[in-house]
Length: 131
Image (cartoon, rainbow, N blue to C red; front, side, top):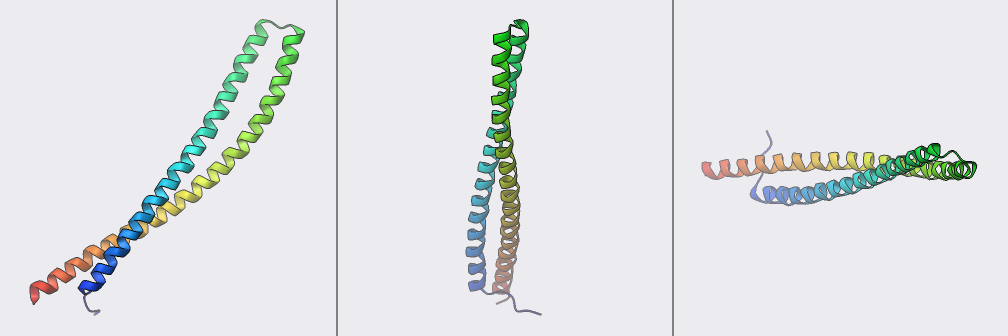
């Protein structure tokens, strides 16, 4: 049976726990930032789609040749912008997924270290009570 942790090891575990907690907080902040970038890119795509739909409705009310030609040019530009936004959204999703995995891992480490600190402190108190 391993010897109970001493006061020094409990202190070292507590320091490691604080470091892991800080890292977990930093990873959560990066996850939040990545999620925000994804939300912004998605919102930009939705605004683009809404603006194009509004323009189409207006063009169909007045189907003159110059209006339809302008609409055609705007549709082409909107498709180019949408393609760029889709690429940005894919990159944001990949970044968010990576940050989510990192945050989960660091949160798990922080939780394990917290449990270890709690157990070590309880062992130190138990040993002190016996002495």
